[in-house]
Image 1 (spheres, rainbow, N blue to C red):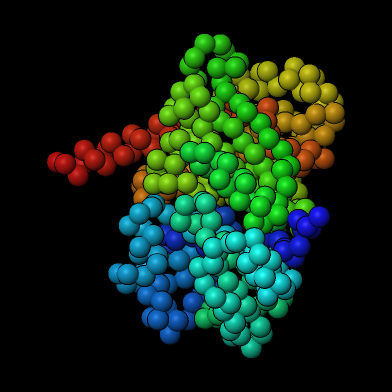
Image 2: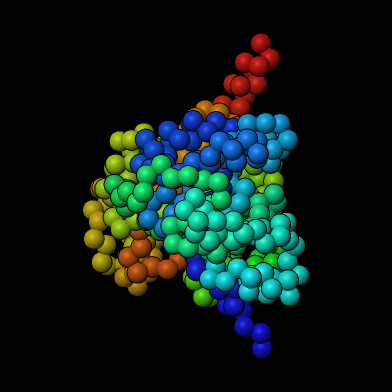
Amino acid sequence: MEETSNLGIIGWDAFHFIVADLERSRRFYTTMMKVPEVARLDPRHAAEQGEEAVMFGVGRARLICVGPRERGSRAERWLRRHPDGIAVLTLRVRDVEAARRRLEERNATFVTGLVSAPDHRGRPYRYFDIATPLGDVRLRFVERANDALPPGFTPLHEGGEDNPFGFQVVDHVTSNFLTIWPFVTWLRDVLGFEEFWRVHFHTSDLRGGNGGSGLASIVMTDPESGIKLANNEPAAPNYEASQIYTFVESNCGPGVQHVAFHVPAIIPAVEGLRRCGIEFLDTPATYYDMLPARLSRLRVTTLEENVEDLRRLGILVDGGDDRYLLQIFMVEGGVLYGDEKAGPFFYEVIQRRGARGFGEGNFRALFEAIERDQERRLQVQRQFAAGAGS
């Protein structure tokens, strides 16, 4: 039987965002998220590509924001079709040639050949891109020396900086589709991923009737590296009322909904992020009124955090059998900036105390919160349209 864990994936390497306003992104990461700017695309490569690019990094997480300089560049073409969003998911592998051979055997669709170029210090950096069923999002496989930068990037300083909120590791990446099966089967058959977790949720299940909205979600994992991709689709009844459907509409196609940062202590992280201007989705007060009884049903008797602190900050809890997780979701870019072009992408902050799931018990509260948030964005769109027409 063919091995399914033989792409040699080490973990996430970087996330490439295409953005209309690079300075706004710089302020968001450096001032609000406290993720330092560590490298920049040099002027020669920027002129050749018709794009500006900045890398932000902390721990094992790298984020690259790309903005257009010229018409016809990939960034400019992306922004004609989509709002700000992730255009490339990059995975680090041990042997890029071996990964490419295996993907050829599995009929992957290659976008580039094998690109080999040294970084600014002459260290090896090799990569190739493949197309995915995730709309215009590409998957890149990178083999590089430790700390090597992508070709054309020059460092702004040597060495990393600590993030005061504890951002070090990406816990998972979540994407939204109108139907998830093409991507799930592609992850299985082409990348060799395995199913890790699934849920089907609908608010009508809890309150009866045909109202409400819901989703179906399947999480896939690479059995070697353990990286996880969560994949959501809308659920009937009221398929088009689902916030998953609304995301796909706002994004002009399927795409990456959020990236989750794991932190060692979520309460001080959220307190600090709020002080820096980060906004989070509101959680209904009744969620915390019902939380003690819910934790009792889940057999979580070891909650170390104070419920009133969780209520004050809007942090969600889920788990079972004395293992739990705490999570919170930032507002999407379009709401944060009052600009629909900033897109529906957002970040999650998560702390795990033994639980390996994805907060199934929090889905109703999350759905209600995101739907309120999306209504705020629709109001922004209507105000923008009214202003444009006056």
